[in-house]
Amino acid sequence: MSKSLSWDTLEYTLLPWIRTAVDAMGYETMTPVQASTIPLFAKNKDVVVESVTGSGKTVAFVIPVLERVIQEEANSSKLKKGHFHTVIISPTRELASQIQGVIEAFLAYYPEGEYPIKSQLLIGSNTSSVRDDVAAFLENRPQILVGTPGRLLDFLKMPNIKTSSCGAAILDEADKLLDMNFEKDVETILKMLPKQRRTGLFSATVSSAGAQVFKAGMRNPVKISVKTSNKAPSSLDINYIVVEPKMKLQLLLTLLNNYRYKKCIVYLPTCIAVTYFYSILQHLAKLNKMDESLKLYSLHGKLLTNSRMKTLDKFTHELGKAVLLTTDVAARGIDIPDIDLVLQMDPPIDADIFLHRCGRAGRANRAGRAIVLLNQGREEDYIPFLQVKNVEVKELDNVAIKPIEGLTELIRSWILEDRARFDHSLKVYVAFLRYYSKHTASSIFRLQTLDYIGIAEMHGLIRLPGTPEIQRYMSKDAIPEDGWLVSPPVDLDSFAYADPQREKARQIAKRDAKDLKDSNKLKSLMRKNNEAWSKKTVTKENKLQRKEKMALKRKAIEEQLIENSDDSDNEVETDWKDIVRQRKKKKASSEMQGDFGDL
Image 1 (cartoon, rainbow, N blue to C red):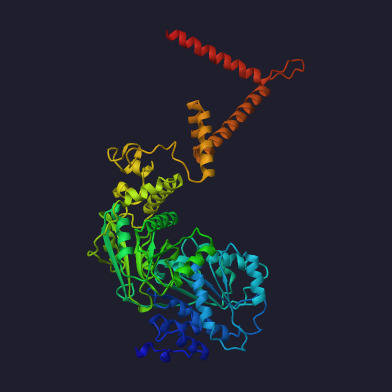
Image 2 (spheres, one colour; image 1 turned 90 degrees about the vertical axis):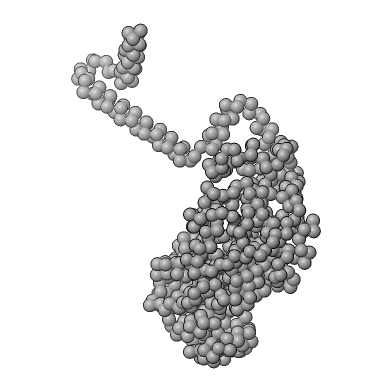
C-alpha cells in the first residue's frame, strides 16, 4: 500500500461514519484525484478536476458534499422547507442514477438517531412529472439534488422551490455540460443559485471545455489535474484492428463468440443501428450462430427512461457472460465493475468521446481492453491523430476472423421476411452516412473515400438507397443497376409488411397513387410537396413586392389625374382605370405595327 495514498494520510479529518463507509465499501487506498480534491473542496475551495476515466472522481466529490452538509448544519431544522443545500448536475440519466447510488451507499452508514441526510434523483421519466418531484421534495426535504439539466431546470423554476440556501454545485462530466447541447440550461441553473457557493467541475476531458468553464461562476478555482503521459488508465489496453468494411460484422461476431470476457459493451454509431444489430444478433442466436452462454442487451437514448434504467440494472447484475449494444449515452461515467471488454464498431465523431468509451473497461485498476474497428484505408490515420492527443493505441494483428458461413445471405433472407426490416436497413445505412459526415476529424473520415458497397454488405442491404452521397461520390459504373445488390431484384410491389395494418395502409396508398393517372399532375404535386420552405417564402415575398409596386403605380396615376384635371364642375371626371386600359391598347397596337414592319 502506498503510504501517501493511505486514507490515514489525507490532509483532512473525515467524519467517523464517512471513514467507516470508506473502509466498508472496499476503498482500501485513495486515488490521486481523491487525495488532492477532498481536502480542497471540503475547505471552501472551488475546484476544476481533470483525471483519467475510472480514477474515482465520483467519490472525490461525494465525500466533500456530505462533509459540507454537516459543516453548514443543513442536516437540521435550520434548512427550511423548500430549500436544499447541494445540486449535482449530470449529462445523462444513467450517470445521475449512478451518482445517486453512490450517495445512498455512503448514507447507509450515517448514524441512526441523527437528523437524516437525504438525496433526491431528478431525471425525466414517463412515470413521474415535475409536480410529482416537487411533492416528493416538500415531503422528504432532501438536502442533495442529483439530476439532468432539463429536469433540474424545470424543477428549480417551480414556485415552491427556493434556491437561496444552496451552498454547492457540482458539474460531473463538465465538458459535456458546457457544450452547446446543455450550455443554456446549465448557465440558467447556475444563475438561479447564490453567487456565494462552492462550485466543482469534474471530467476526464475538462480542458476541452476551454473558456466555457468561466461561465460556471467560479471564484479563484484550484485546478487539479492528475498528469499522465497517456490519458488512459494504466490497467486499460487500447487496441485497434484494421478490417475490410464488408467483414466488420464478421469480426465483431468473432470477438463476441471467441474472446474471453465477463461483460462487454459494443458501441454503435446511432440509436437505430442499436435496434437493427440487436435484432440481427438475436436472429443469429436463434440459428445457433452465437455463443449459447451469451446474453444480449440494448440501450440507447430514444428508449423510455424506465426501460433504460431496467436494462442497465439487468446488465449490471447479470452473473453470466453479457453484451450491451449501446450508443454514446453510456459512454460517460457509467461504472459497471465487471466490464473488461469494450468494442467500438466505428470511432466516435468527437475524439474526446473515444477515451470516455474506452474508460468503461479497466476501471479502478482492474484489467480491461478496448478495441476499435477501423475500415481499411484512410481511417488508419486515426491512430496518429489520437497519439497527438496523448492516447496510445496499439494494433491487434493476431485476431483471425472465424467467419459465419453465408452471413450476408442469412441477414438478407431475414430482411426479406418483412418489408419493415427492409425499410429499417435503409434507414440505418442512411443514418450511418450522416453520422460519418459529422466527424470532427473530417480530413480522415471522408465521404469521398468511403466503401459504400462494402458497408452496405456489412449491413446486409439488398438495395442501395439513392442518397446524394452515393450519387456524388460513386462512379456510375460502380453503382449497381437501380441500386440492387441481389439478383434477381426483389418485386417491391408484392414485398409485403408482416404487420397486417401496415400492409393494408401500403395497399391503400398504392391504390391512391394509381388513381392519379395524369403523370404531369403527379409530378406537379410531388414538386409542390417537395418544394423547399425557403422557396415558398421567396414566392410570397415576390407577391408582396408586386402588390407594393402596383399600389405606387396607382398612386402616381391618381396624382397625375389631379394635376391635369380642370377645376370646372361640369367636366366629366376621367376614371384612372380607363387611362390604364387606353395605354395598354396603344402599347399593344404599337408592338403589332412593329412586328409587321419587320416583315
